[in-house]
Image (cartoon, rainbow, N blue to C red; front, side, top):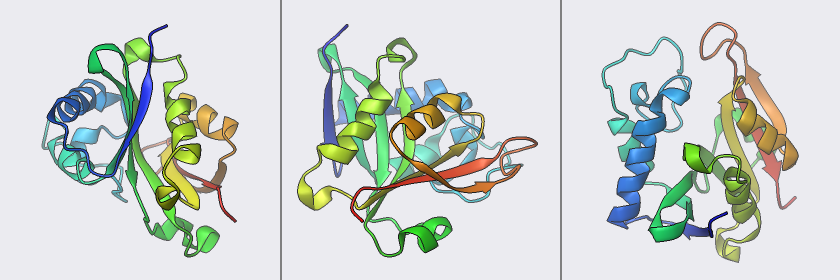
Length: 186
């Protein structure tokens, strides 16, 4: 197994890493429901029956670049996976549960296919929970995913996340949007 390192960036300006993130977004665009290329924002509320205007996730990428990142870097400075974060994010769907706590909203998680099954996504969550500088460590971590994203949901449940809200058929027939959260500091 190759050596890997987790790195946190409040503002990612490394052009090599940004190019690799763009490549991962393009490569796995259609694994997301709906595809990232039909979304304009990383926290877009309306997720079904979106009009396809782009074949690549350009608008999504531009929004993503404004966020914080946790990267998993492998040999030869290769980005094996990334997690994007909206820090101190107020999410109306969870406001009743988390109040005014400092929330880090995980907007995107992608791990390259050849590195899946190596614990990278779980490692990025572990890093977010336990390795950030104290002033950046959130009180709460939240995210959302689609109900058929079994691998992500499995990681969230193993890490002690609770389901907060389920919006039935939000992403199409039989595909719900599911919000999860974990309180780190009560």
